[in-house]
Image (cartoon, rainbow, N blue to C red):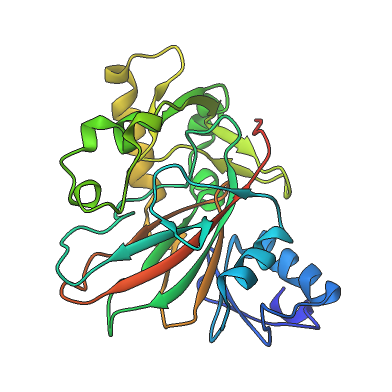
Length: 283
């Protein structure tokens, strides 16, 4: 529970997931504090920090305490620190990146553990990020649906999201996304996973990267996938984070979905993201 922590202050932001962590300077985290941050990450699936001042090197140093860094193939990197991906929307741009529910890197054979997003420049209002608990989504299904999904695997792919078919996107044309020739990843994962750290069952499909169920055609798969996407976005499974400059969000890609609101046209938003290596997933 939130009051069990000694070195950090923990304020849950919704009943389903998410907590703001106070009393922490991410540039200077001792082992006891880090242990409690890890426990909060596993308990709440996404954790938020306010008023952080981190250089790119300090952002990387905090990330490397969790896992090795997974360099994104498609996002424009920070020139001075190519392990940091830039997620930017300029005032004259109309589309944003990550505007639909998804989880990062599910197209990889070994998907990412988590992502640490740091706000460098934010609009006066808008650009919030929404998160949904895939623990709650699984637990909210009927026992019959849980049993059926428990026997399924699904294919995930980067091709339709980052490949040549997306060349007409504004974010491709203006250089925010690149390397369509590298969008060759296809992977298969259980539809319901046992989280490798908590052991809890989590729904593991998402609208950006899941293509079909293994052994099913895409036409057969789509109606059930559409139902799961709608189910997973139910408001009672979600929380919403309002960014400020210096805010940090760190989410668990095995237990959450997320998307960013595109409601701040004419304003600038710049985020720095580090993605962390995970482990192979199993049912």
